[in-house]
Amino acid sequence: MVQALALGGWGLVWLTPWRLLYFALYAVGWESLLKPYDPQRRAGFGYLFWVTSVREAIDRLLPVASVGGSVAGVRLLRWRDLPAAPVAATVIVEILLTVAVLYVFTALGLLLLFDLHDANPQLHRLLIGFVLSLPAPAIFALLLRYGSVFSRLQKVLQPLVGKDLLAEGAATLDQELRATLSRHATLLGIGVLQLIAVLSGVMEVWFVLRLCGHPVSIGVALILESLTQAMRHVAFMVPAGLGVQEATLMLLGQVFGISGELALAVSMAKRLREVMCGLPPLLSWQWLETRRLKLPARRSA
Image (cartoon, rainbow, N blue to C red; front, top):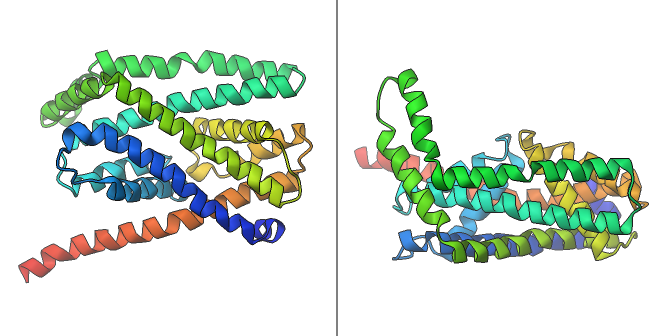
């Protein structure tokens, strides 16, 4: 990261405030999903903006397989006395929308890649793999909408647990998921916001390469960002996508005459931004957790 900063200069610091747009767009979308369950706006835009930044920081900086942030997000909204099942439903639906948006984003990157670069067997295999994976998010959405996934899962786990404690909660979660997924206009609006949010990452790649003395077009930056994000989400079990992001940028960079060193500098600049955007939310979250742990002790004393 220090070497990337030396190569690109202190202008790379501007990536941090630029990322705030990403958090803001996701917070606006999440707020619209929560609106029916939070008429008193106990979790307003400012609070959701902070929770979104905490979720992002957990997924990007901690070894939680890119799912720990969502669990923490449900917990943090429960601090505002919002019901657990609706909050969990909004988080699950938001993740599903993110996957759908990433498919659209990846499709844009692949189309541009075929347009800017002569087709070859490797690109054809990449396209075939993308097309074959398309049914997965659609099937998952249909299961959530019509399949009572969590009720069925509870029935499978009941013989192992030996109790029926989760039956009511599972049924409620399925009901809230169906209700949330039926709000088509709201989901479409949130999808547009999320697409703008992920497109903001294109400007990061374009800006870093320009600072490093190797300017590229917006189209090339979109290809690099979209396919890198696609690979990071495919390899979601790898903590923080360590190695995945770097390898993808280096391989794709060769197609456009970007050296391995420069591609690695782009990746390190993005990770520098992740650290700068992630550490303050993580520290503030842990400080608040500590305060909540101390409150019962003080009351009992």
